[in-house]
Amino acid sequence: MSHPPTLAGGVSLTLTTTLLMPLPSPALLSLDAALALTGLSKRTLWRRIAEGGLRKQEAEGSKQATALVLDDVLLLAGLMLDAENYALLQLADAGDATAQTEIGQSLLQRQRYAAAVYWLTRAAEQGAADAMQCLGHCHATGQGLPRDGHLALMWIAKAAAAGHPIARRQIAGLCPPSRHD
Image 1 (cartoon, rainbow, N blue to C red):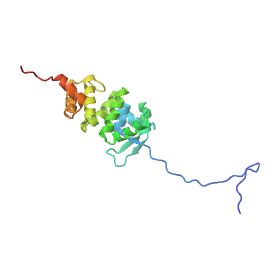
Image 2 (tube, rainbow, N blue to C red; image 1 turned 135 degrees about the vertical axis):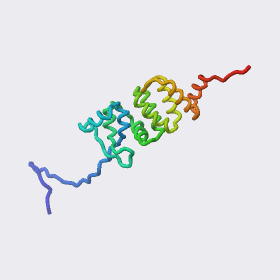
Image 3 (cartoon, helix red, strand yellow; image 1 turned 90 degrees about the vertical axis):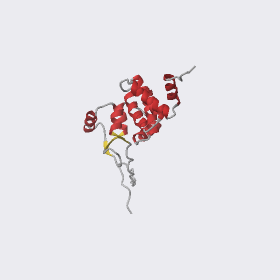
């Protein structure tokens, strides 16, 4: 019969076996999304990766070969997200137009205009009327990109055609019904 090891003073040690569970993989973000959120150039982002400031992983089943650890990107971007927006950002990066719109609107509220335009553009290109209207507003006001009345009108008209009520009122205000007496 073996006895447990003892320390000085007669204190005995009991050894246990612990099963080690693999750590969950960290949430990842595409390189393009990281560029939009941080506002850094691709070259600077790659330098941060090389210096160890950003961790990268090869993304399985992704359009891009490289993805970055989401928490590292958020820290670099100075963004704090609650659990809901954290999950939305992952859905947005996976291509969900509704999530892209919501993340874009959230970034507009935080005055992160260039990042907002990135997400709103992706959603608008998929036909999301809310994103189209917000993107038109960004073009009209110069939030996140140069002011462009033509693109503003184009996106607002597309949103109106898709049934967006605010965009419809905006277009109606520009083109009042003609009166024939």
